[in-house]
Amino acid sequence: EIVMTQSPATLSVSPGERATLSCRASQSVSSNLAWYQQKPGQAPRLLIYAASTRATGIPARFSGSGSGTDFTLTISSLHSEDFAVYYCQQSHNWPEITFGPGTKVDIK
Amino acid sequence: QPVGSGGGLIPPGTSLRLSCAASGFTVSTNYMAWVRQAPGKGLEWVSVIYSDGTTYYADSVKGRFTISGDSAENTLYLQMNSLRAEDTAVYYCARVHLRCLVDWGQGTLLTVSS
Image 1 (spheres, rainbow over the protein chains, first blue to last red):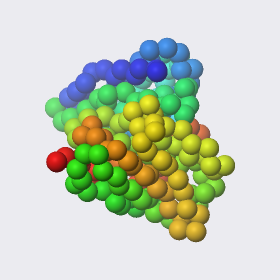
Image 2 (image 1 turned 120 degrees about the vertical axis):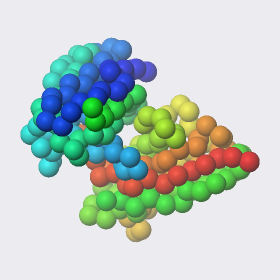
Image 3 (image 1 turned 30 degrees about the vertical axis):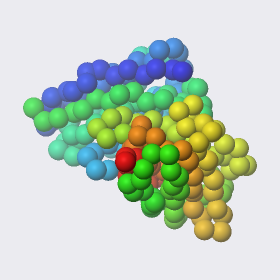
């Protein structure tokens, strides 16, 4: 099983600031990495796939980078609606996809 | 957006079937998945079904859960048997695209407790 880890567990950021979230895989997943956003009481929403491609309708302030074992999700300027939990997910070992434990982005 | 249903409070050892009614796309021509989230926890993949009927399961549910689709009803199902306390979670269905989960249902809560 490919184990995904994320850091930090919680990130406190002020609106308008930049947020940088990290995700690491226990072995190389190439670029088979996605990011999801989940707000309280809601289902997750796909933000980024193939490590760096924004999903349909996702604002340009969200960007993804990385390959192999280390990945980053950057939110260039936080909007109020961006405060949420973010999960990374590997699909390299499809169909046995695994998720990271999440990073909560909250208001500083 | 798919609409999930069928959750509830049920005793350990019993069975339950979850449903996920799709609209805007056809369940039978897509890969579809179930993912669950225990209260206050992260996401865990449960099962996937391909458009050709091939199915896969997480080890934690293999032999107990069965995923299926009904083309006439355009609905995805998850039959869950021999339920355990650790199966307590919100269960989400989602359409698979490029090995990612898109078009998530709103989730249905299953609580396994005596």
